[in-house]
Image (tube, rainbow, N blue to C red; front, side):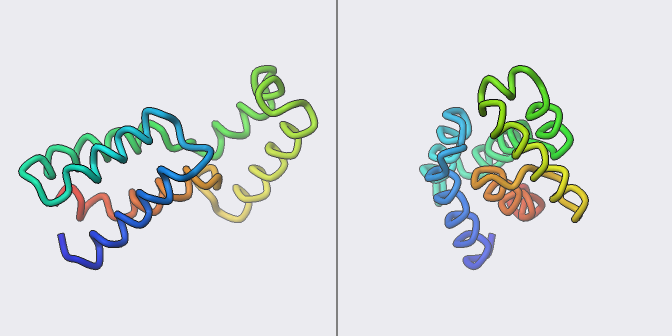
Length: 119
C-alpha cells in the first residue's frame, strides 16, 4: 500500500476510534489494525478490519427504520428520534447510502480504500 493511502487510512482510523458513535467492537478492530500496520500480521488484519467495518456501517435505510422504531425512540428519545429520521431521509434524498455520524463517515471513507487494503 502506498504511503499516501496508508496515511489516509490511519487518519480515518484515528477519527473512527475517537468518534463517540463508534462501537467498542469497531474501536477494538481499528486499534488491532493500527497495531498490525508494518508487521507480518498486516494483511490478515486488513481482511479482519474490512470485515468488521462492513458489518458495522449503518445503511441509510436501516438508520431510518431504527430511528422510527420504538427502540430508536428509547435510545434517542422521542423528539431526537424524529429528528434523526428526518435527517436520514434528507441525506438519503441527496444520495447518501449510509448514516453520516462521525463513526459511519470514517468507516465509509476507509471502505472507499477497501480494494487497496485487500490488495
